[in-house]
Length: 428
Image (cartoon, rainbow, N blue to C red; front, side, top):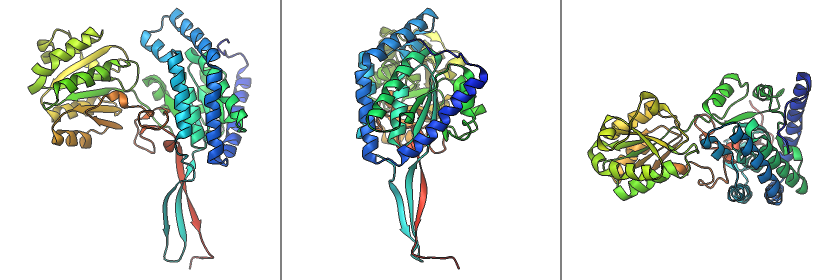
């Protein structure tokens, strides 16, 4: 399978992408009115189709990875791009988990009766058509298609040109599963062109077809989406995540959590990029943690006190602002929890931040004060993942504060409407 390349004229591109919008809007109406059982059957059929076409998907991904290596792309990027049989099984598992999760559509959020007898219900309802623009990670295509379907939505998916073959193969399998379950294939569509103009059209809303845009990628992509979008955006900024080791931290726990938070997978947005350590405990905590990180191949960059306590490169001002997505960690010694929280507030991206501590008051202060989408006590920042939350995967981690925040699962892909049930009431 060759990567899709823009071939038609501009007018043909406009017509083709606009057609995706019309098809998605029609499909969204149908899937909104489907029963929860029908949507569940569609998800299970999608998972079965992904399994059946595993060889095709992995072959397409091998071509994408080979091209990425030829083009000299960084290993962190290739790690995000690559699918192995184990990772593909994880993709299938996430779709099945979405199928097993509660269907949010129609859930009554509130129900009350006014003195005049008028009954009012607030009820979950699908958003409609979700445009998902993502880079490098082809698994996002399956996650997004599944979660959108679980929430009664249709999806239009636009992956990066580097993962075009993989994304096309995944979406083709999902569409086959939808058809097998008797649902419209256009519930999940992929933009078949790598031309950046297609992204611009999605950001304009495809003539009113797209209800929400979800960007999943680096800072430049998210900035473009936020600047150009004419429809609501679930912002997913970079994951500049921190782990803070309080003076009361248990050394064994601090070592295990820090290693996992940084090195489990360095290319995920929940990977810790900056380690903050209380000055009063730094001589005990820093050397064994730094040594263990270096043994695993992690390059360290420290502030002046960190460099004094353990040999490492000196950090620059830019290090505190950098999402490495690589085996690199910046380390800063801080004078207590207030300074740690101030550092996070100034340099952080509002994604995920963690404290390791045994002091209950310190834990409570950190969880209540740090204003990130996800705040964690005594666990790895790599739990910033919709699957780990039990959401059946995620489209991304929303770092904004409107509507969706944190892992964007099926529930976050719904809105609500009010149903008023009367018996002849009129206003005086």
